Image 1 (tube, one colour):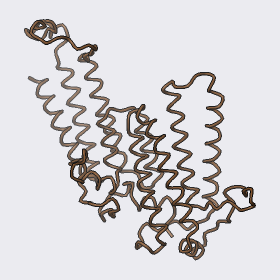
Image 2: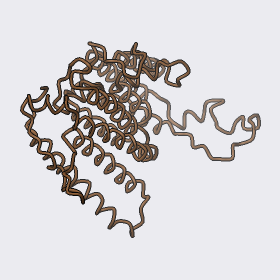
Image 3: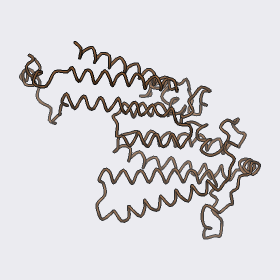
Image 4: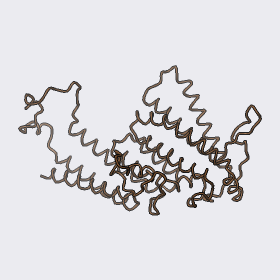
Length: 344
């Protein structure tokens, strides 16, 4: 009876934690941590009170082969049932990983959210912690897609947004991958009226939210799907790069940047082309290139961990990784040299 009571308490605490996570707020995350700690304690108590494997074999009806003749034909593939200890370890690990995902409430910048996403992806967690992490950082565009009739995501996002370009609500947490967080990463004003920096900048920010949201979703998939989605996501980054170039060269953005004292010399992002024209890449396009190189870098590293490369490919793999690292370093140096007043 003690074991059954502990299991019921664990289920209750886990359910309460998931309800708190659904609030998508700092207070909800803090309460979820408390419920998850209680669920871990209840799980340990249930495991300690659980009967041993030998005792289970003595219970009528618990033997695997007792009623085998009453079952249908065995499936063509072997299904390995986890042992009691394996099930306990997996469930305990899931609760611990869920606790880690609550650390998103400590994120105060775009870079912090990136680091949080990469950390959760590196845990190789079960689907529940990864889904919770994606739910917490997903922006209004994803929530709007989830709210559309017929979407497989219906019911998973409580946001009232009904359009892909819906603005985040005033009480949205600061860590959500939405327009304010992208503006913070680019040293743009986190709140400005649409059109005040030009239509090209508005369109760029709209596409940036989509590209970054797709990157986060890809990072929180399982390793095999994650690598494939990162490769397909390069199309999003390529599309975003064109929008960034348009925004960099727009008269409204150039005027606004000069008024605030931004320092950016045309051509400093690359050498002149064959016609003698300087590289038109500006700070926004440089930021996109930095993110693109990071996605490519992670894609190549995942291929190594999945053992998809032969030894003959290691040389060119190392060359590409070193090249992408140099690109990211150069882009970061260029962005730091802009001397842009943060937040404008």
